[in-house]
Image (cartoon, rainbow, N blue to C red; front, side):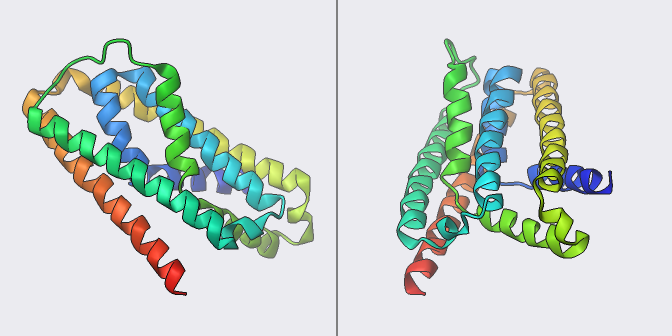
Length: 208
């Protein structure tokens, strides 16, 4: 139970942290509503879970494979720059319109792409795995303990997904065109910042 609760709290802290996904979540949620925000987060959760499985099954070599990290990083940079440009464009135009024919599949795929294109979470999972082993003994490295840990993490992540989607959907009624422009401006700058941050990480990887 203590392992489950620890993982539950860790999941809340992990997903509540600001990042590229959070910025895109605000944009799409305010513009398209509850299901768009929810599916975006669920797609991101799939990506995070996949990185977790890769780390926990011992495929840590992927995190240290320079060509793979470069390819994923470049994809991530291009995706973030595209999203930043779209956000800044909407901020300039000041549009506050419903997205007609919005694709649920597209929201889910975007969340997964944002998560999978960033290989940094695997370092987080590798660190968590070593912490579990060191704090709980050899039994913690077994399949049952890892299953409990992932269950706690995913439960908190799912609750956070529904909470954030509901909060954003509820707050849409108070959104004015000016506020939407400000949100797009802040999100666009944030997405651009994360693109530059990822680019800097790749440059450091090449230098090292």
